[in-house]
Image (cartoon, rainbow, N blue to C red):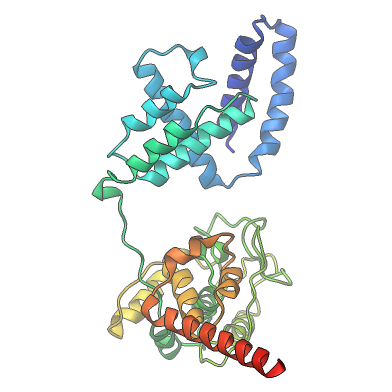
Length: 346
């Protein structure tokens, strides 16, 4: 959380405490209280990713601007009545996506919790959000990303020059992103100067992991086997120092981290040359999950491999017409075998 967000929360905490308790804080208290609030704010900040901070901050800003436009007194901002919350969301009906409204409300809810203020968002707000989902603007609707397919992966394997350090790093990253169902953000640095060893994988790591779980790369029976690709990458780029990002590659003057732009541009150039459609980095996450399901991997195992913590990964199922028969047939056969075993045992 940036320092200005912390100071904003601190300021609102003092303001709400003053109105709630109907007291005038002395200069001594005003000097001491922000220090404890600041420490609490800094500790709380680590519970959220930077994107969450951005979304929450945006919601607070929009809410304050909405209240200001209606000349609502600041002491009415919190605790916000449900009528005020619904008026705020209704103001944006048909202008923003439901997920945006949910993020803004989550930020407002946290702001209330942070200040120990009651939250009045109940049934009226839920009904409004249900209506909001039916009038989402077309500009906020996005079609599902197509998946990276096994054909895309084989095209990379056949056209990358694995004697080249850069291509070896691309091949390794693509294989792990696909078969381990990774988001590129888990593997790659946004730019050369933005490597953070607390969030990005370094070569010194004994296991590949992010903030939430290990990334498991196993040997499989396919030319794009991620385990073989990983061993090859470490060998082809053996002079890269341990403190460097995991997918860094050797250059003529040392080494360089792999960036998302370089990686996805290389992939798309090969796919275009072989007549395959260009894709985005997120398509590896989707494609890997789809391929594992098509191979008959149980959905709960796919969810664990992709580090999904909810059923949200079901939204990314592609080739559903091919996947469902696999599990419906297997489920029916399992049920038949259990019935037969029970009949024989009886």
